[in-house]
Structures are given as structure tokens and as C-alpha cells.
Image 1 (cartoon, rainbow, N blue to C red):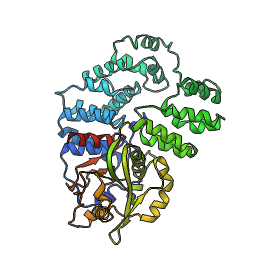
Image 2 (tube, one colour; image 1 turned 135 degrees about the vertical axis):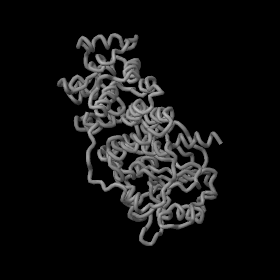
Image 3 (tube, rainbow, N blue to C red; image 1 turned 180 degrees about the vertical axis):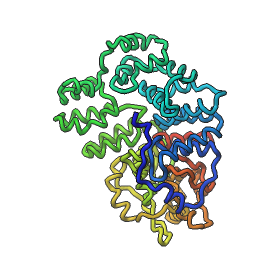
Image 4 (cartoon, rainbow, N blue to C red; image 1 turned 90 degrees about the vertical axis):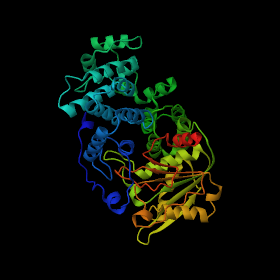
Length: 462
């Protein structure tokens, strides 16, 4: 439950986005709520803002936004963005500030894992300093959520060693058993539920590490995230390279993000090709036709970490999306862009040396060539046109953060996106206000592996 204790960090919030970028976009309350939820990890400070600020912003905005829109946003956070705590927090706030709408069904749908029930009750305790009495919509929603779980999930997440366990939840909300979970709930209550077949359970029970991994790989019973996180353990336990490659080929999951694959690749770069293939199998389910220019901001602010507990920077997010784009876009022109803030000059580079996660190995060369300033979106668009890249491209996609030096220095010129049928700027920063120039087909805040699917959906509606 330490997740629900805010932690102060050394971040000086708002220095870059608040001072350097003086022209901020004017958003509706709903747009601001989307921005602050889809770009943040709840309870975690980031480069621009403290966790306290983030939570206060979400609370203030939920009060002002139509409750059904907040509920729909919570569902999007869970199933499109794959966030775990933010959608629960949104629903808790809806229940507090909008008594005229029930969160029962949405809460049951969002709690895809049993441990999310404990998370939600933990939030309730943090919010009100007590759990009981549980508001009726919450109690009914948590009870209904048990319909999602089978015996394996109930056994895996019973959390008997935690202050708040799954049996506590059962006793608090009294779920009605169904055919899928009746036997498991009975065993849970009677304390006869056997541990789930996981690698952690096997090893904690004294099983041989090599033998456990070999057995579960042969059974194809090792979870996708467990495989990516345990490549080093597999290597150290003496499992053959062939079997590790077999394990990676088994990775299939709708809940992974590109960063999960990046973390695995950094641990085991010798398996980069296999990890790339696994990422492609999970995410590259569509192909976007035509020529796409994908421009990645590599300015200094993109090097800030995404949150107080993360090992990943916004640069990592952008590069991971570039790796993903190399599989999704039919014809991709990959551009890196930065520059020099002192002379207000942008610099740009077309990259073709690598694709997939291998792009990360070239980062130092890219950064040293381009410098750490920027981004300069007006100059980028002029350069793409002057170099002849714009005339053949159907779309331009720019991934950046809240800064645009061309805008912040008072220049009146806006980026010329007219050569493209569609143009998008994706702001993956987490500052409250972004840059909103109105020249793009869509100005998108936040990111997920479904980002490019969203672009395709927008274009299919045209």
C-alpha cells in the first residue's frame, strides 16, 4: 500500500515548461483532465510537477467535468492507456463529487485483476482515513468485479501477507459466486486455496530455478511480463540460448507496453532481434499506408524521467514509439530534431541506420550531432519542405514535450503543415499546459501503444 503515500522529490516543478514555454494552449476542463491523466502516473512526481500537484489538478477538474465523460476517460485510461491506479482514482472522485451517477458497472469492468480491489479500498482508506462504511455503488462494483476472476487469478492475488488481503475484500463486499469462481472463493474462505502456478511460488517453495523456468517454458505457462523480466535470471540459471529464444517467442499480451520490451532489451541486448519480433507480434496488428514522416524531439528536456519512480525518460518513450512506428507505418521517414537554444536554430537529421529497439544504441551519435536545444517546429517543417521530404509524405507525426522554442521566443510564424494530408503533434510531457497552435490535424496529449491506431482511426473517419 506504499503506492498511496506521496513522496517528495528533488524536482523543481514547472521550471522548463512554465518559464521557457510562455505560450500555453487554452484547453477546456475536459481536455485538461485528459491531459493530466493520460500523461501522468498517479502518485508519482515527474520532471515538471509533484505528485501532490497532479492529484490536486485531477480532483479540481473532476468536479468541473460531466461525470459520464470522467467515467469514459477512466475506461480509456485502463483499457487503452493500460494505467492501473489513475482510472480507480477517477472513479473514486466521481463517486464523491457526482452523486447522481453510479460507478458500479464501470468499477467492476476496470478491476481486471483482483489486486485492484485492494488498491481501490486502499485509496478509499487514504481518502477518508477509514474503509467502512463502504458507499453502496463502490461495494456493489467491487462485488461485481469478482465475476471477472477465475481460480488462478484469485490464488495469484490473494495477498494473504498484506494488511488488506483478498479474503478481507470478500468479507467486506460479499460477492455472489458464479460458475467460474465459486469453488475458488470457497477455498479462499476456508483457507484451502492452493498457490497459483507461478515462477515466484515455485522458487519460494524451494524448486530449482533452472528446472522451474525450463518446465514453465515447455508448458508455455510463463506470463508474458514474467518472461521479459526474467531473461537475466534465465541466463544466470544456465538455460540455453535456444530455450530463452523460445520463451521470448511465447510473449503475447494486451497489457504490455513498448517500455516493457525496452527494459528487456537493455538487460539482454543479445536478444534484441527476438525481443523486436515479440514486440511486433504484440503491437503491429495494423499497417498504416502511405509515406509517414515521424519526427522525434531529442532536446534536453526530453531526457527528464517520466515520474519519480520510473527508470524511463520521455526520450525513452519517444524512441520506443519510433521503434513501434518502424513496424506499423508502411513507408517511414524517421527524423530526429533538436538544435541550439542560444542562437534559436534548429537542427534535423534523417535516420536509416537501424530500426526497432536497435535505435537506442545510436542515441549518443544522434544527440551529439543535433545538440540539446529545441524543439523548433516551425523550422522543422521548413526544413522538411526545403529538403523535399514533405512533398511525398501523406502525414507528419511529431513526438515532443511541452516546449517549442519557436513559439516561446515570441515568433509569429506557425509550423506550415499544409503539404500533408494529415499532421499530428504528440505531447508526452506532463505539464498542465501544452502548446496549442491550431495548425495540426490533431494535437494529442499522452501516449500509449495504441497511439498510431488512434491516428489511423482519425483518418478512417475523414
